[in-house]
Image (cartoon, rainbow, N blue to C red; front, side, top):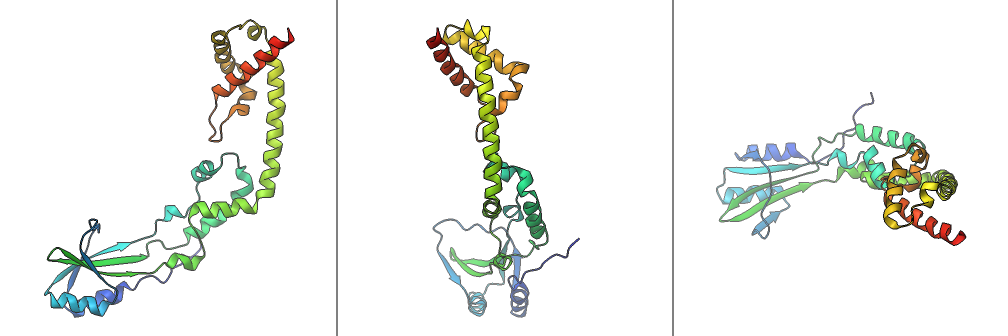
Length: 240
């Protein structure tokens, strides 16, 4: 297994030692300051400690913030959500190599923290942060997936064109099957044709044709089959 990569994050140790020297205790907590709350934000640690002493505070609170590793991992669900027609075998290697890189990053390293205390209903805050994820030259998973897809666009287009040709061929074959089907020929109104479609899509003969009626999200659309049958009925009637 490859070594974990550690980024240079925020300097919590300095914050800890400086407050300890000043005799100030701090406790970690969940931080969610209500909207429109009066607040003062200090960006300098010396100023923050001086203000704590000035107000005679003995305790402050801190909240650490972290990157979410799941925001950076490319999953099969993300690929399917992004584009169900992408042949996974084309991008599999690049996705695996990218995810290995993510696995090596130490996401337990916080990217920011907020320390605060409340005096007379006013929040006094000290904020420190560092976007260390930028050191690794990576974006969120969806953006990284787009990069991989763009690198293989020529291969993807070729396979998708071949698949579309196959679907067109199957559709033509299905159309001939339906036009020659006696059950279709006697379905003289919409209700009968609806029943015909319902029986058709449940039959074994229809199985090879199901992929011709998949939506972009990969779901089968019986409505599209109904539309095709109605179009074929008009063609059949015009030939009589």
